Amino acid sequence: VLGVGIAVSGLIDQKKGLVVYGRIIDNEGMSKEDFSKYVKYPTKLIHDSNAAGFCEIWMSTEHKNAYYVNISNTIGGSVLINNEVYLGDGLYSGEIGHLNLVPDGGVCYCGQKGCADVYCNAEQLSDKTDGDLGLFFIHLKQGDEEVKVLWDRYLDHLAVLINDIRMMFGCTIILGGYIGIYIKDYMDDLYERVNRKNSFFEDASKYLVPCRHNVEVVASGAALYFVKDYLDEV
Image (tube, rainbow, N blue to C red; front, side, top):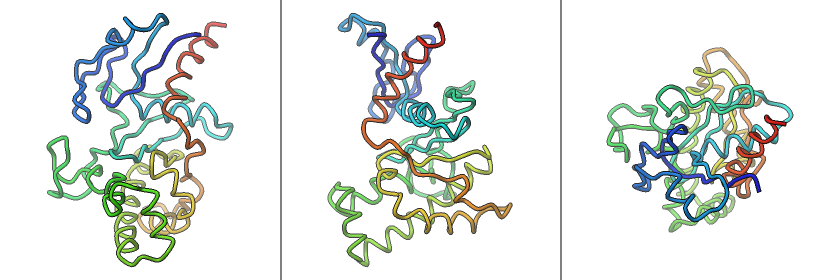
């Protein structure tokens, strides 16, 4: 056993092993020592979106650079450059959920208005079916009109967010998280919407892909950090 990776929400100072921002689950100040005293192996705190993104890029033979969008009950992301997670100087390089999507729009948990998180998180859909996202997509396939209207509006917002990411990073974009599990059947529709937003007439099908790993991708990514460190030392 090389170590135990612990993936959590929040911005993490890797040098200190400390959560420095944790509004989602109120875990600001959490440290790896909170866990390591119960674990006999080395521990590491890892942002959940970075863990998921790292797993996707690790398992890929096609991509070295990518942006992983973690579309779950909140929106996160991970910038991946040369098979490495880029954290940025402020530790929030992947926090795409807080791009302003709708000026003076709905209030985000961060306190700002109009963040992408407000319009693109998975709860925008699952709230329609009492928190059951799978049931939402069942109703969508069955042709439920109210669900179709909600999905249509959701895809419009998601297309804007994807185009913004493409304009900033110009790399492959991987759609993951809870929505990533279901999005494969709707990619053609999403490609069309993204293409209408793109300033350079790019074909979104060439750079926008659904995630490949749907089961415990966050946990796998957290473990892979220790595998990478080990292989780097060999």
